[in-house]
Image (cartoon, rainbow, N blue to C red):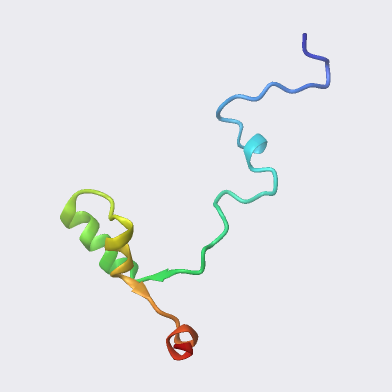
Amino acid sequence: MLSANEKKYSAHDISYYATDGRLTAEPDGKRYRWNEMIGKYRELGRTLTEDEADAYRVQSFANANAK
């Protein structure tokens, strides 16, 4: 039996899952050429694989010079 203060959560109650206020995951620091990726997505008619997406990844200036 539920107590009076206990709350029942439905699958649509985002406040249960988003306990810290964010609606997305932490960024991974990767940057992409989005317009080109979207064009490829539309051309293929499916999502891109990790390897396909890496072809559109932008290397930061700091990372490119560190090598």
